[in-house]
Length: 390
Image 1: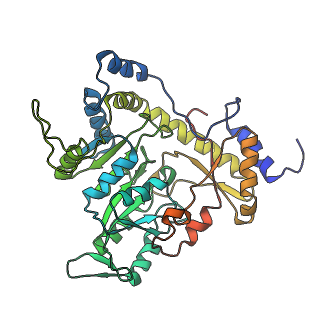
Image 2: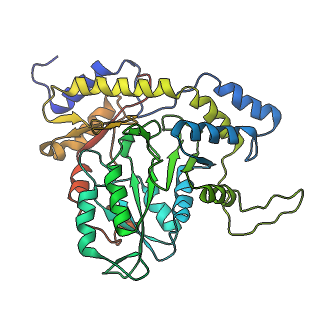
Image 3: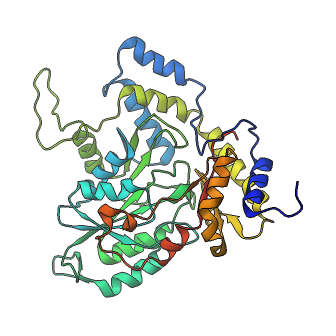
C-alpha cells in the first residue's frame, strides 16, 4: 500500500476495513429476507388472498400502530400515495402553497403537485439535513401575513400556505419541537414525511407521530420492505377512518352493490405485500441494531480521516441510520464526482444525495427561500453502502 494515498484511495481503503462483505459489487442498500417471509407470502398464494383484502393487511396496520405508538395506521400501496393522502387529510387544496425542503426525494414535491398545490422550498439544517425551524421562521416573518380567516398567506403570491412537510433525511430526526412550534405560530398544518425513519426516535417518541399525520415507506430499499408500500399514521379518529375509506376507492360496504360516495383512490396495500411486511416486522429489532452497528464502525473508521466525517444522529435522537452519509469538506467538492466514480469502479456502489428540487426542471419556477445549506450539502454528501449485515 502506498505511503501517500489519494482521497479516493483513502475512502476505499477505509471501506475495505469497515465492510465485512468481500464480494463485489456492494450495493447501496439491499433488503434482508428471512424468518417467516416465505411462509406468510406462500400462505397468501395458497389461499388466493393476494389482493387488497386479507388478514395480513389488518395485522400489518396493527403491528405498525403498536410499534410506533400511533392510534391509527392505514396501509397504502407506496409512500408517495400515502403522502398524497396525508396532505389531503390536513386540508391542502388546489391553489395552496406547501412548504417543503428542497433537499428531499422527489416524491415529497410530487405529492404536493398531486393536490394541485405548489411546493415552496425551504432550507435545511446542516446537522440533520431536515427542515430548519430557525431559518424558516425568520423567512416567514417577512414573507407572510395572517389574514382574517386565521390562515397564513404569502404576501408575494397571495396564496395560502396550507402546510409544511418535514422529511427525516436518511433516518435522522429533525428538530420536531421547533417545527411544531413554528407551525402553530403561523397556523400551518404539519405533515411528517417519515418515509425513511422507521425505528427512529426523538426524545423516545417515534418519528411520524409528532405531526397530525405522518407517513412511513416500505420501498425495496427501506429497513423493512413490502416490495412497495407505505403506512399513514395519525391519532385522529375521523381522519384515520377517512384515510382508510378514501384509499379503498371510497367504496361503501354492501353485499353486492358497487357504491362509492366520493372521489377515491386505489391506494390500498395488497395482502401479499402486507404478509411480507408482517414477517419483516418480526425482524425489525435485529435489523435496526445491525444498521446502528454498521454506522458506528463507519464513524470510528472515518474519525481520523481528514476532510470528511460521517453524519451523526442529532442530540436527543435515536436514528435508524437508514443510510450512513459521508460528508466531505468544501475543498473536496470539485472532486466529488471523481470520488463517486472511483468508489463505483472499486465495487462500492455509493451515491450522492438527491439533486435539490429547485434544480429540477419541473420545479425550477416554484417559490423558494434562500437555500445556502441545501446547495452546500447537496455537493458534499456521499451515501455509503448501508445494508444490514454488512
